Length: 440
Ligand SMILES: Cc1ncc(COP(=O)(O)O)c(C=O)c1O
Image (cartoon, rainbow, N blue to C red; front, side):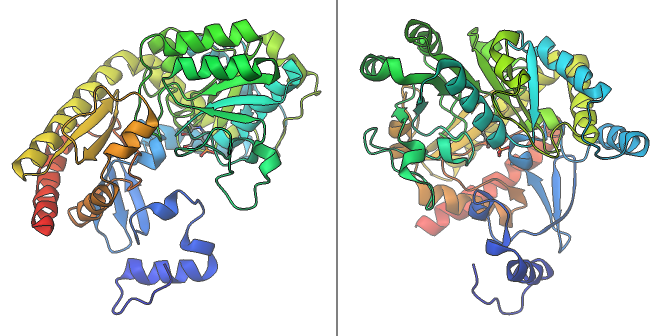
């Protein structure tokens, strides 16, 4: 990261300057894995423009946040108006609390009451704390490859891991912080059952990303989420759905609507805030009582500011108006893009395929298919990670941005029209040809 660049472009020079002042040149460990160096000057619709004026079709969409594309004028206008009238922040209840709370409950019938947080990480942390308080138990079951933010209690099991070893993912996280976390393979109900039989009386919650978003877009096999629901009930644990990524993405009502399983607590984020720092956790009134009474501490100077809640209300109203047609169009364009990438791979003589669900996809290099793959570990072994990373670097040269995390995902937005998908496919085809040429 710190190597000197001879004759730097404007963006590269700026990145060097940024890196002088900001550790790692970024403010998130995950973004440090992005294609380097891309310094963005502005965004609009499906596009990012860097400091050199280069345009990129963006398939990262602010890490899945921007369902309506970058910088939608109706959203920006609502936020400006709210700031003008209410001010950006005052830290008191205001009418948008109720307006957003009511709208979330309409999309998610499992939620009667909500609390707002500044990030998915904070909201997951609070939900786990609440589950521990409600049950008086320390334990947590999570799944291999699942990402629930970077807080200490869930900083474990992001990749394949030994369930007994439970090493934290970050230096500085005390082993004690994750000592009560059991990491099970996603889609392996028998393993969860065995874990519950061994430790069920200590388990406060089963915490699950209902579709493994950062784990290769693994979808739950039929009966898996239902099985988790039954195991949680049997052992008196809570079932927490982390829908930070899947909420408003796989369906307006999230994965719980798509798969018909009702969790006890739900965590939301990303799309909800329309690009502003907003997440939330909620559930039935009875389960939220310790938070309501202040016995479970949840706070934050900025939580529930008018700015972010105005954005959320605008997003939720837009979803209410456009939901049905929008999700169908996104699914159709995602399918077209996925099929087009597969054709481009074939035409270039590359072995690969594309995983997809709703408006997310992931190109996989090295194998022609992964339909039968159930667990994160199996999928991680399939992806040719160096080739995928190189593909993403070549895409940038051809004006497309996709995050190069090998089991990450591409996101489409409403701004990724048929025309944009068509243009993307031409560019992707050229990147595939370059990749094939390099391998010769
Ligand atoms: C499923 C899931 N949970 C939690 C988080 C953490 O959210 P945030 O980055 O807003 O802290 C993420 C972020 O990518 C996520 O995908």
